[in-house]
Image 1: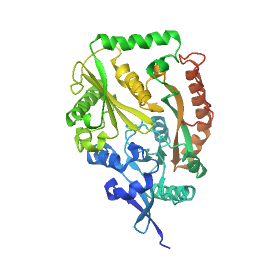
Image 2 (image 1 turned 180 degrees about the vertical axis):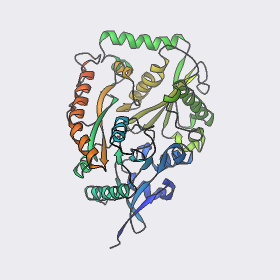
Image 3 (image 1 turned 135 degrees about the vertical axis):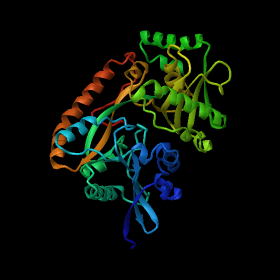
Image 4 (image 1 turned 90 degrees about the vertical axis):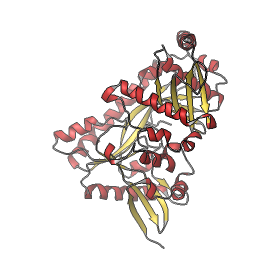
Length: 398
C-alpha cells in the first residue's frame, strides 16, 4: 500500500486539472471548478499582493490525488461576506495577532458549497478529521491564529463538526421555484399590495425605453464581457472604499470561451443587447442560478430590481431553475420574494482562551440569528396560501 502524502500547493495550477476534476465531478458547481479557481489566480484577482495567498491542501496516494481542500492565507477579511471583524477586535484586545488566517471558500463568492473534496471511492468521514489534523499542524507550526471554512456544504458540515469545528450561523437570501409556470404565477404568490408594487417597478423600466434581454452561450461576445467589467468597476467605485472591487479586467476578458457555458448576462438596452446601458452577470449550473455583479451607465428608477431580480427570476422559471441566490446583503431582497435562510461557517481557533470565549458565545448567537430569520420571514409579503418556508431550526441553508 502506498503511504498517503500531504502537499501544500501555492497555486491551483500545481494540481493537474484532470486530478481536480476527478474529485469534484460529482458536484461540479462552477465556483469550485479547476478553471474558475485558476482563473481567479491567473487574472491577478486572488494573489498575495491582494491579500490572498493560495495554500491548497492535497492528499496524495502516490501520484493520485484522493482529497483536496481549497485554502488561502488571508491578510484581511475582505471578499468573504462573513464579517468576522469583531473576532479580530477581540483577538487584539487579548493581545493576539488575528491575521494572517487560513480560509476555505471559493474566493470572492458567497456561494454555498465549501467542503473537502474527496475521490468517489474514498471515505469522506475518515478523511475529514485526517485533513483537519494536517491543517491544525500547519497552523500551529506557522503561528496562524485560526482556520475558517465559509458557506459550507450542509452535507459536509456534520463531518467537520464531529471533528471539532465550531459552527457560526449567518443568513442569506434565496428564491425557490414553487413549480411556477410563469412570472405571473410567481406574482400571484404575493399579497395584492406587493403585486402592484412589482408591476409598477417593472413598468418604470419599460417607460424609460429599456428592454432587458438574457444573453447566453455564443451570444456572449468578448466585447460584452469587457462591458460587464466596466459596469462592475463603475458600480464598485460608487461605494468608495466599501466598493468590493476585487476582480481584475483579465478575469472577465481572458479566455472568454471558458466562461460562456456557465454565464447568463441580463442586458438592459434601447436597441441592441450587445450595446447595453446596464447589465448583470449571473452564473448558471443545472437547477441553480447565482447573481454576482451588476452596473449601469444610467439612473433609472427600479432598474437594479429588474436587471438583478425580476429578469433573472423570469429566466429561471422559463429554464427550470429551482433556486436563485441573488448574492450577499440587501434587506430590499425580502420585499421581492427572497426568503432568509441560515448558512453555516465553521471555525477552528488555536488559542485556548479565545476558543473558550467563542465556544460559549456561539450557541446564543446562533439562536438569535435563527430567531431573527424567523422574524424576517414572518413579514414577507406573501399571500396566506403561499407555500411553506420550511423548517429553519436545523440551521441549514438547504
